[in-house]
Length: 215
Image 1 (cartoon, one colour):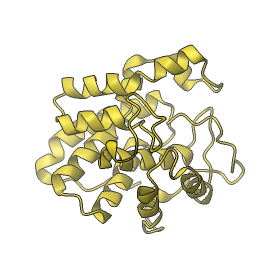
Image 2 (cartoon, rainbow, N blue to C red; image 1 turned 135 degrees about the horizontal axis):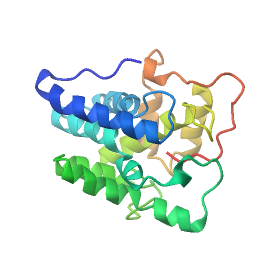
Image 3 (spheres, helix red, strand yellow; image 1 turned 135 degrees about the vertical axis):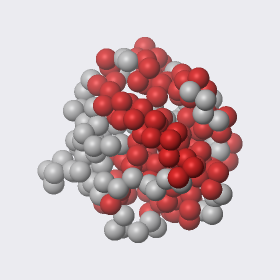
Image 4 (spheres, rainbow, N blue to C red; image 1 turned 90 degrees about the horizontal axis):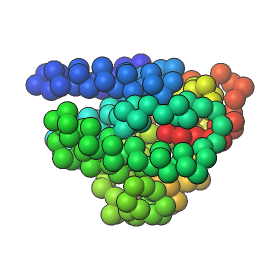
């Protein structure tokens, strides 16, 4: 799968982040590059919204390391197929803050750190860690939330087989205004269908089975 093009001046840092993202993806048991795919789709949405090049670069960086906190925590329940217990759920809600802290340790700018912190916030205020809602959530974090959701649904993991592109787009529509910014969903759904990053990895027999999603 093609990865977004890098500005030559940015190649060195992104090479290191891509390697880190591969480690994170492996820990989360994704069968294909997950974070680079999110970065490409997030950037495509950002381009449609005319975000500046610096903002787009920060968004791509954040996409690559958005689940860094999970990899640092190394909890066994992340790979388990069953639903989380209440204790595990509360523990899991710490990962965006840990990710923010780890992004800071790696010298990523404050914008990247905050996108990582807020990538699990929901449009209706029921996300975490800070319960932000609507436009309180930075635009880049709202974009990342949509792209992450789509990619998590359309890739295979041991506890969650991929669903089709059509089913994933239907999910985005159903959760627009609840989990997801409805305008960002609208823009995401307008991306060219021939984009390779929009391809689902479902095998044709698992449509509708991803109930226990943890992206």
